[in-house]
Image (cartoon, rainbow, N blue to C red; front, side, top):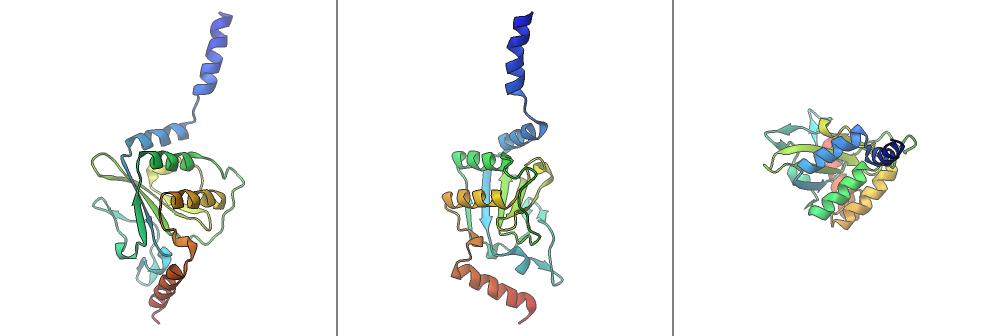
Length: 184
């Protein structure tokens, strides 16, 4: 009997995953396509009645954003998808991750199932460490500046132009968008 107990302890110890980890893994298995968009600071151009639109709106299986503002986008292959989920699942931030109050999102991850149905999104700001996600992705550990740094490196390795790089091109786009928003 003692040997059975000794046998089950390691199995139990190594097979225990938190409910959050299991939920993320189940979601990841359902995902067959991942797209990532990069755009200028969304608050400068995604407005309603002169005010920044809050959150991401999904209508008829599409994200309700002005797609002409997308600077770059990539569709991930299988290995890239695994790398992305590994980073999203990683609890780099814990209780001590750095956050700022700005939330100027410039990147959006879109998750699709085998029927090309949009089943989740994850928008984030690399600079301040803030994020907004679909309800099904609430189990993903918190985003923070430290995770943003790793995400930026990962997105660059995928070949995505990073809107937060503040290249002269992106600075000019955001400057023009700011003038439009202010009516100048």
